[in-house]
Length: 235
Image (tube, rainbow, N blue to C red; front, side):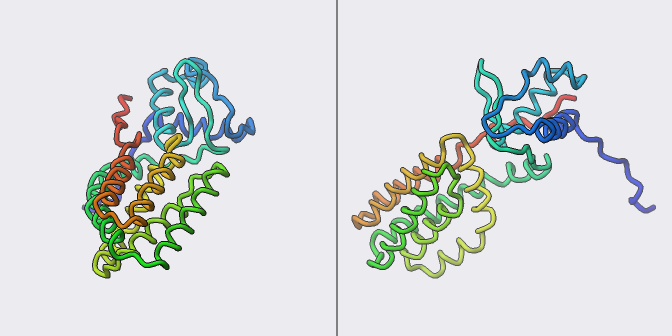
C-alpha cells in the first residue's frame, strides 16, 4: 500500500509560539534592542503554559535572535524573528561535533604549515583579511565573510594542495559552524582577537604557536548554545 497517506506531523506547541512571536514582532514593528513581553504575559495572551513559552524563547536564543538577560527580560537581537525549522536545527546540532573535530585536525595543521611556508604575499592577504574583519566587527557586524576570508588566506599560506582540497570538501558544514559561532553574543570581537593571535604566530614563523592558537580558536567555535540545547518539547 502506498505510504502517501501517512499520519501528518503535528507542529510542537512551542513552534507555534515561535510563529506567533514572529507575527507579533512584525505587527508591533519591533526592532533589535526592543524587549519582548514577560513570559507570564505571553503565556496568558497565547493561552499556553510558561513552559511552552520558555521553550520557544530558548529556541530563538539558540539561533541568536534574542538575548535573555536573567532578571531583565528578553530582548531582540535582530529586527525579525526569522527562525529556522526545528528539523534544520536538530540536523546541524547532530553533525556539528564531527565538523569541529575535522576543523581542528585540518586547520591546526594548516596553521602550523603556514607558519613555515608563508610568503610575503601570503602575509599581505592574511593582514588584509584581518583588516576587513576589524572593520566589520567595529560596524557591529558578525563578520562571517571576513572570517572565511581569513581562514582561506591561512589555508593558501600552507601551500598544501591536498589539505586545501579536504577543506573545500567540507566547506559547507564549516560555513555553518562559523555562522553558528559568530552569532553568539560577544563572539565576533573574541574571534577577531583569536585571529590576530593566529596571524601573529604565522608571521613570526612559529608553527607550534600557530597550531596552539588555531586549536584554541576552533575549540571556542564549539562553545555554542546549540550544543547545550535540549530539543524535547515536553508538549
